[in-house]
Length: 193
Image (cartoon, rainbow, N blue to C red; front, top):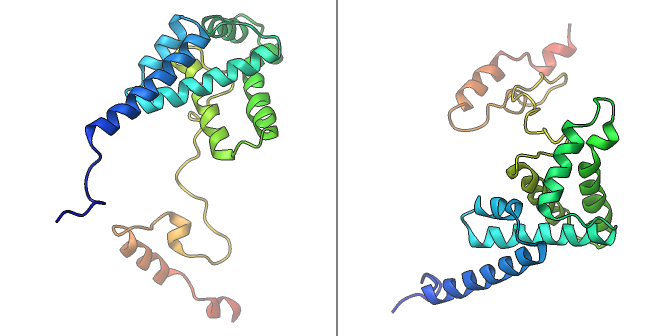
């Protein structure tokens, strides 16, 4: 007798889900128009589900932009962002940040007002940023990945474990943490003296 929970879903169920995701993604892509920017963006993802989710996020963003009176196609948006970032003077920060500010207003204004959960907003913002990036038109000042903090942590001033202080958690580094902790003066010796 086989356990019902251990069986894999049949291929028919997976195919139905994939077909539904493809149908949704195609409908959203048609809503955005037939252009190179969307085709380039969607072609970078292998998972049909990811394509559907990202295409939906882009379609909702463009729908919101249309409410504001911004009627550019995805191809025009990519080109406009490039012009704003690279053809404006160095001191024209508002022009350079135009698309970044639109995204911020959408994610931190409109989506918050609609009650969309933070993780969903984060995912939608990531999809929209990736749309620009995949089309060789990254948003201005969207280089947080380039400015990652150093993995080395600053020493703790008061107590705390050496594992937290030096990032020595994990099986390979526990011995190192024991050595470091044994070298640390005790609190009793710090108060007497």
